[in-house]
Amino acid sequence: MKKIILTILILLLLAASSGTAYYFYSKYQVAQDKLDNPEIAAQTEVKILTDQISKIMVLPVDEEPTVATVLEKDKIQDQPFFANAENGDKVIIYTKAMKAILFRPAENKIIEVAPIEISQPEATQGLEQTSPTQVIEEDSVDQDVDTETEE
Image (cartoon, rainbow, N blue to C red; front, top):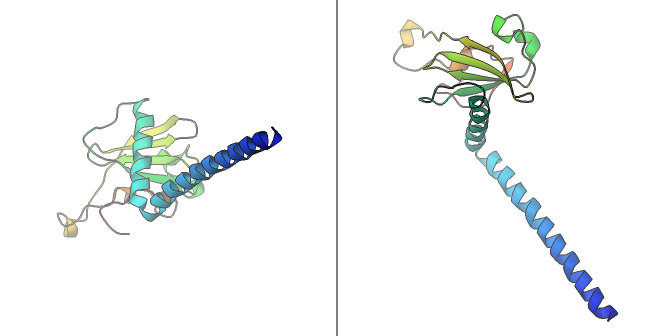
């Protein structure tokens, strides 16, 4: 009788260990896929952010936004748009709609919304689009989504 109980207990322990190992291995695989292809991670972040913000306000539906993260708020605090920014806030930029949104994911709160003006130098007009994140000081914001120009 003790051998049967001991055998069942060992089998249950083995099953629990296997299940736990599979769970963490699958989580590792998902993280590894994101590291191998950062574009997927960026697209996922954009989708999550736009889903969160669309519950609070109406967003443009005809374009995919560019997303940037505020890293050093002290460098951009003198700009009115970033007056209330905190490190970790997200800047969602819609170039066609000419709108920028400062969003704080930790509080699920829109901090600021402002129109943007993206100007292109006349010499390169028509050749390549100015990166929407050039409106923001590049030293103080980490760009999460690839734009159409290399920096």
